[in-house]
Image (cartoon, rainbow, N blue to C red; front, side, top):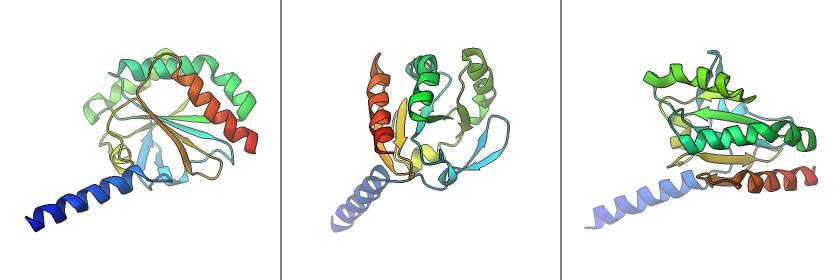
Length: 165
């Protein structure tokens, strides 16, 4: 019984540590063009950075990224924000990511996480999932799921960071 309780306590502490992650872990991913990127080097020159986890088959994810793309130019102009979209499509579906991005005309940098290494390292359970990093690379906001208007809450968080700069 003590062993079971110890094991459960250990698992809970590990899960809490992943959920409380304050910076991006070092995970190697690829761009849709095949270049290698270490996630701990992602930055936006001191400006806010949004990381949005999605999959080609996730309708709410696609709605969120499409809705943001409609106002992304204005967001960038006002706040200097950068958005990086991270696909969690598995290897057999990775070839669907670039056509989806191109079809929607999403202006984002897109990374591929086919083994969900980054998703797992951050303790993310469901998508869509959005992280907001401040100019120093600290995770300051997290949001999962998408409903119409959720992008407005994200934008308010981005603006708060921009005002501090």
